Image: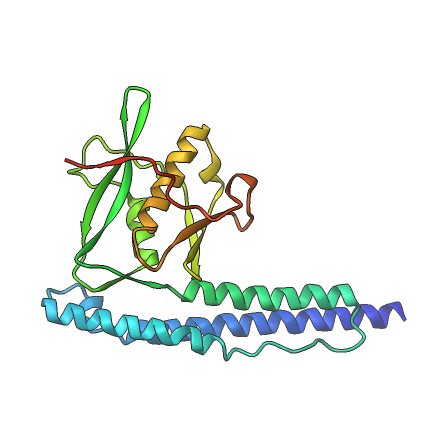
Length: 246
């Protein structure tokens, strides 16, 4: 009886593995199809006009809008075969749901309204005190994605912006999601390293940068998928003063 029970469990887990591989192949094939639809001039890095570049951006934006809908069609079993113990069923279904939710989160990238550009916030030290400094980034389109702004923030000041520091330099920013005006951003453990003063600089950098957009009213930060007591709330601008970079 124990052997039969063990065989059922092994057969079930094998089926789970096959389904996960199938989901991965499906997602990879869809992404490949989207990439291949991008104009050849972009992929070969040839010189293109402003009109061609804007047209390519529209194609990419349209492709990203359809991707989550396609991923929803990947089959997820309603239940596992009878005879599998309750804890095993629960664990297996958690795997299915977790993979589906994570894939959708990675594929979706919210768009934010811009008017010629947006601001980034960095840090400047004068003695032992740090100050929040606002710099401008120009943008040719009417919208920008959350991911793009976070990447610019993590990249830090450009070569001409001397004297500015980026507290996010050693922090990995992961997936993000926007719901009901609250942007949730996942970071690695580097977010909470060093002193509380440096941590506050990091928090202010991302909160002040992201809440400038009308679609975002507050920010929640998670560390490696887990909420931490220090961050277990919706963060808004603290009232800290900042200055423009000269």
